[in-house]
Length: 216
Ligand code: AMP
Image (cartoon, rainbow, N blue to C red; front, top):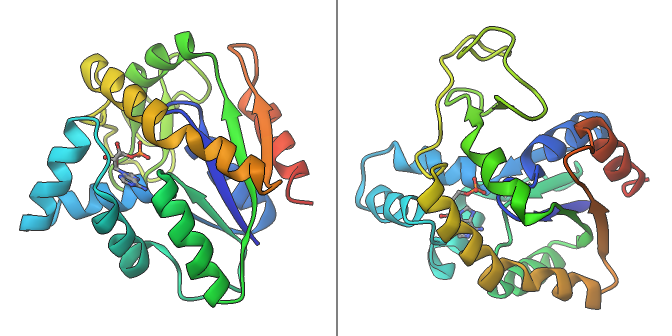
């Protein structure tokens, strides 16, 4: 089974996707984590990707699709897979459909987390991540680190993503509206869309519970 996590930046795709993966024993892969790792490699490719990330733009489709094939899609598709952040454009989604079909699998559900836009910016500026194990925390909403600035999971120092500042967030939200939001319609047309509505009172546990129902 392949599940796609959809939603605006800061909607909680990563947090929910990881917990969902733990609950159903699936592989969880976030394309953003993969691209951030590439940025650390100090190559020409790293420079190009860094520019895209820091300006709130998407990595161009050709490069994103190549990275998906080379570094994101696991070789073993017998285990359930949760994809967070991929596909991000209709071009990627169409390519993914045909690639999976050639391997005898398909996207089962696209789980869309729908969060009011006024919540998003405050959530993102308060987000902290672990650069070592990619755990996600929030200083104001949901999971705070037990010890300030330190990852509960591996003890590394938490950081703020370079693109989690107000200016870049606005650009990322614009990119989302133009390029990624149309995927809601794309999967709806295929009868594969599952919507989860969330507001400031919805806990992560509630979101995860709903997401689990969609995988049964
Ligand atoms: P994320 O961690 O999902 O917010 O992704 C961080 C950044 O990585 C995005 O703003 C893009 O620049 C890049 N990125 C992640 N996934 C994709 C994708 N599927 N296609 C193009 N760019 C992507």
